[in-house]
Amino acid sequence: MPGEKLYEGKAKIIYATEDPDVLLTYFKDDATAFNAQKRGQILDKGKINCAISTHLFQLLEAQGVATHWLATPSDREMRVKALTILPLEVVVRNRAAGSLCRQTGLPLGHILAPPLVEFYYKNDDLGDPLLTPDRVRVMNLASPEQMDTLRRQALHINQILVPFFASCAITLVDFKLEFGLDRAGQILLADEISPDTCRLWDQSTDDETQRVMDKDRFRQDLGHIEQAYQRVLERVAAQSAKF
Ligand code: TMP
Image 1 (cartoon, rainbow, N blue to C red):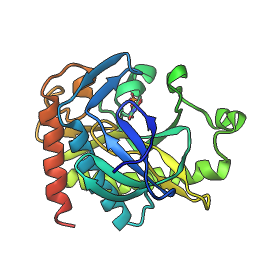
Image 2 (image 1 turned 45 degrees about the vertical axis):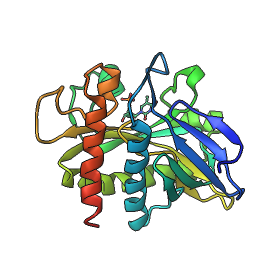
Image 3 (image 1 turned 60 degrees about the horizontal axis):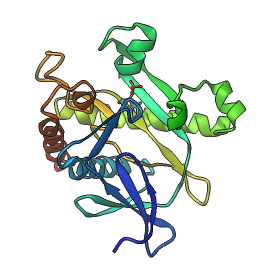
Image 4 (image 1 turned 90 degrees about the horizontal axis):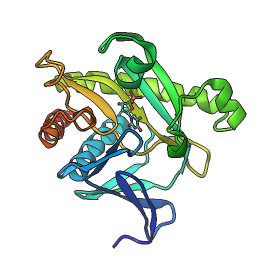
């Protein structure tokens, strides 16, 4: 039985549990894009994202990355450590896409080596603006030491996820991470890692539309969204079984 509803976001609901150090995350089918100007539902997305995130958190934990994941008691629910979430979205980019192409003119798919790490302010009213180190300092969002840790952690996670997705014949184009602090002040990976929060391109085709296996299918009305998410899950599950 979930406890009190603590927070409802665009894609998930957070409940209290019997343990103050543990929360229950419920994954919804609701999808939004462009700061919730576009809304819809993706059938069974909650189940698929819960399963993909579970596989990826377990993979990362096995490689020594501290995450909030504790257990996945049902197909839409995850038990996670209660953390104080930092109001930052940490984006890692291996190839140019999305806002990077729009804001810089870099061509879609341009390889970024070394990968680009960016910080955005998690604030819907402001439209999640891109931050600079000086803005983070002025806004007191994180200490310089915490920023160093976030950057290192994000790159380390990228180094684990890129070869894992490659083994699934998927290119990890970019992804967004969120982190939180436990009682001891330790930084842990939080939120989810799923086709909602990553750009994933199918390596079996170069076709710009067909290769998209992530929320860009919803953002850009490309169709076959559920099937694309399902295909990511099938490949991730098959590869996870080998670890
Ligand atoms: P962007 O190109 O729109 O800045 O997105 C970069 C990556 O971050 C992409 O994989 C999608 C993900 N993302 C989220 O998970 N949540 C968001 O609110 C946004 C804007 C992007």
